[in-house]
Image (tube, rainbow, N blue to C red; front, top):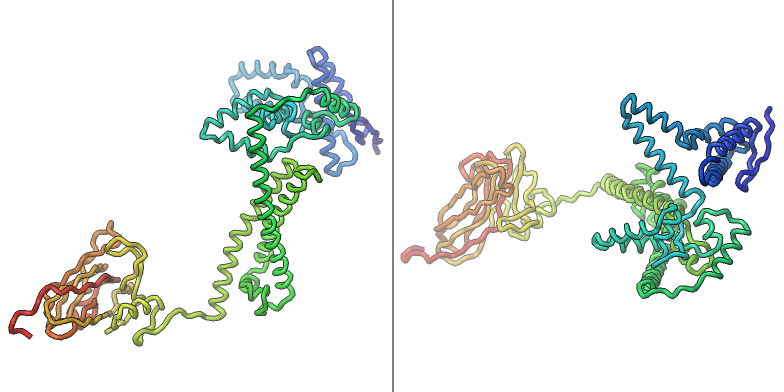
Length: 528
């Protein structure tokens, strides 16, 4: 059994056992001995002690009540031994590498570790705020400089470079000015600089603020302040409208969820699963539906909470949301959207499949005794096409680019994968006696399909086979001249019926469109 003692490290109390305390004391004494010869060594040791206190705080937040020797050893390993921090061991290691060859991988890892430790040391114990004490516009660059312990001129120069890149810097600055809160209270000013919030430090900040001369804002800064106020006012108005809409949506989803849990599955009442089209998803995959509802609640609730928090913070009733909290909310909202959208699509597919299977919807109809798709029937009916024969046809129309280059045009199209379609469609037009010309566009995958016209005699014109693979549409102009019409009507159409054309069909598909009949002359005298 080991005895625990209470120590005061950088103004914080920790429980630590005796062995761990002795090791920690030896480590701190060795640090003071190593850095005592250097200028500013005491400040370096104080920073290291602050870092140790932060690591102890992290252990306490993890539920560890007393620090053990193993914890202290791990912390010493992370921070480094005195000889490593002073660079003595590094010099020996460098000489050894120079003698044995350059180890680039180890050097890169060491450089990365040094950069990481340097950033951690610069930002330790600080919070990111806009600096009101040294600002040209909103104090963004000065606040970042204080947070990283660097010169604000560097950040301002970088922002100017970004601004020269198509004005990107202006957008970045406005976003940072809206996202990063301003250090307004003495406590926030101390947190920005990484100082302990003590009565003495708070008093110093207050006295410094009173003694600070009032600076008259420049024209550029005044213009920026006005712009920021306009942007903030507009954002508040839009946010309130969005918040109201999201609130209605949230209560709608809440009512729908409660109603769906209470009402029977197949109920026709509003907000039941059946009425909302969620019956299929509940029957097929209830877990997916539950996850979707939870994600939908998050999608609605996170913006509502953020907008209400923003409005209350602007009125001064609560503190502004911290940077970390804002980032967490944004990440959670994006994750919720990424979950809700694909699950919503899956639920729609479940609804479609369930509805089809349950009600066995049949979108086919009958046209002139032939069963076909409703779109096919509507096209043939609107064109007054008469089906002479229609056997072994998978469909009768299709849509795509026509012979004139217009897209999404519907045309007559017959298909059978085994070239067994027997098809003949015909249209009759009332005309005066005379000589006529029939024109259209047609295409075919193979031989044995024809465009025809029936006047005094039968005229057949074979549809050219599309042999050019690069010509995806393959439309060819077809012309039948000298159609003699002695009566009062002429018939025309397309056919693959061997009994009518005299040739077998060896095409998987063939199409025709834009039939046009034109009178070209009168009948010769003496002919009827």
